[in-house]
Image (cartoon, rainbow, N blue to C red):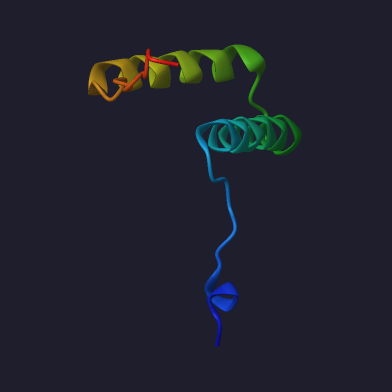
Amino acid sequence: MDDDEFYIGGPKDYDEQTDAFRFEIDDLVNRYLDEFDINTFVMIGAFQEKIQELIESGNGFMDIDLED
């Protein structure tokens, strides 16, 4: 077996990972709008709560290379 048989596809760089995350959010929102009786105001509130949780988790640090 060569190395190509063990290749697992997926987003490789930061931009592709960000796009994949955004597409997942889009799909989730559309699914809930289609399948549930939830409205956009409730969704926005839930997202705002999650945003606050993410901010408080302290996982927002990024290494930025300023030499480019």
